Each structure stands twice: as C-alpha cells, then as structure tokens.
Image (cartoon, rainbow, N blue to C red):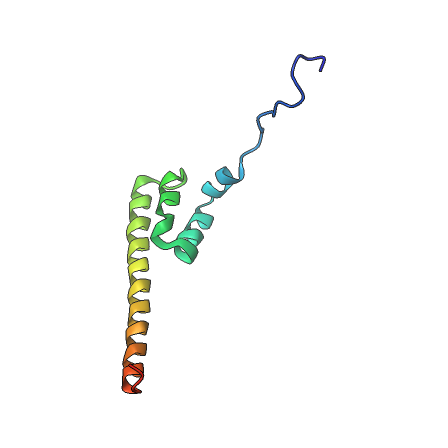
Length: 91
C-alpha cells in the first residue's frame, strides 16, 4: 500500500464487459430475438449500438410478425387438438 490506494478497492476493468460484447454482436442479438425471446427481446435490440434506427425498425416489425405467426401457429395446433378431442367424445 505504498502508492496510497487501499487493496480492497476494486479497480475499473480495462476490457469490455460481457454485456458490451453481447450487444456488439449483430448475429447474437438476432439469434436471441428469433430463437428465444420473440418480442420480449426487443429492448435488447433497441439498446444495441450496432444497428441503425432503420434496421431497428425493420427488425422490430419482422420480429413482431414472426412472434404473431408463432402464436397463431400454437393457437391453431390447440384448436386442432380440441377438435380431435371433441370428435373422440373427450370434450
């Protein structure tokens, strides 16, 4: 402690944090948007600095339509199953 700083004081990191690395990868953000989170991942897209405003708007529209399509597909499968169960006399 000859330099006047306490040893228990954390020093700021010199490298980029994991979040900064994540937000700087276009591929990673798009995989998260379309592979896992759907519209819930849109805030991640909008805080990222690697996309322009026009790209953010485009990806937001595409992701919203994609999510709605998946919801519609899931609803269609549920309705199809309901009809099969009704046909079988279960409902």
